[in-house]
Length: 80
Image (cartoon, rainbow, N blue to C red):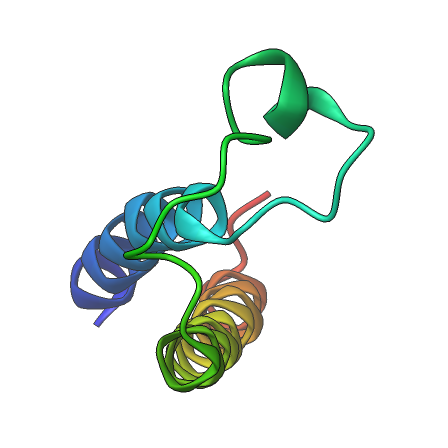
């Protein structure tokens, strides 16, 4: 069970990084420094942004849940 939860945590961690980097920058931050300030016709759709927000929140919830479950599993096993 610990191995399966660790795998889920690793996969959702990578997905979180990718999803956060896909978000459109709000301006004035690091995203502008690396070319995020250039307007793109692909990233301007509000439907795409809304779906990306929902997907990011969903993956984030799974990520947090896997951390909590992994902590409880380690605590019950007496590890740490």
